[in-house]
Image (cartoon, rainbow, N blue to C red; front, side, top):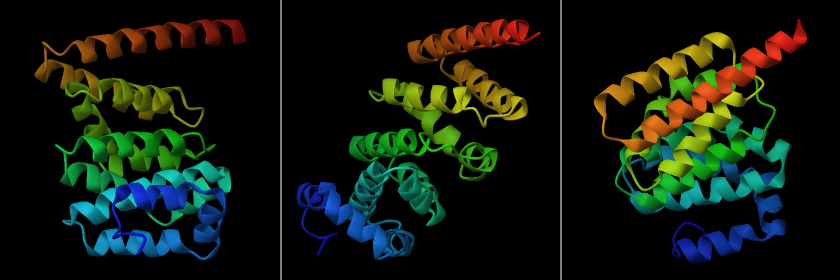
Length: 195
């Protein structure tokens, strides 16, 4: 089956455009989400599930919305949290989130990522790993997204500063804070231009 033949065969099968479309048209993303929820401690199912959900996001905004609606983001964040030492799971999760953020999502989706699923903490934890670059990209995408409200942005920045204090030797936090300052200065310039 699709979930049992090794990640290579699962992702090769689903990376073919027609197979992705078939899976979406037949509601396979809903079933996959159910399977991931039913077997949260099974690393193979979680890895294959996250890989397939990530690949389905290639089908455009409608597919991204469908995967989000089927709790794909929640399942991905839970899997990342359950298997924090699995590099493939973390990378796949970051790629999934980056693709999801290409969707012109509402503020509610971003709030769900940051608050409800504890996705922000999961991503911030990755700043201390070899996936620092991917994690930084996800955080910056959330912060620069047009649906990110000032309150949500302030909450994210506050969480980043809290994590920075716990990891003072972590270069990634310092780099992220510098990028945040650049974003803030751009934002101030944009506001002044608008006036």
